[in-house]
Image 1: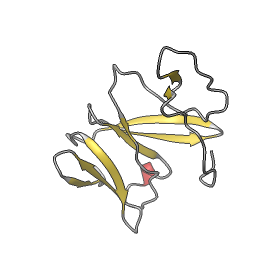
Image 2: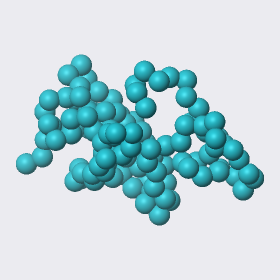
Image 3: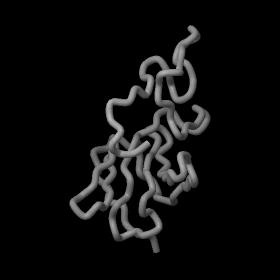
Length: 125
């Protein structure tokens, strides 16, 4: 989906990911379903992030970064040719229960967690 495509209906609260939220029948036809989802055995709630546009970590260029509130992983996906082309889990250490993502004017990524911390994403060793 191009960044300019606004006003799309992603289905909340009718859908959770690609699945009907309730046991009642639902019609996903007019909805824009997610490009990627995972089951509750991997986490409880995706915390959406940002596409990395910074310069400090070239390996992340163009990747969408996201986390899970319960497990605190840091993953990225790269979207290409109309679908998810790559999913990577990053060794970010203990980032806690991620509540949000932000970026500075240089495109570098910051992560906030439920402990009130603001973490800056930096290159690894």
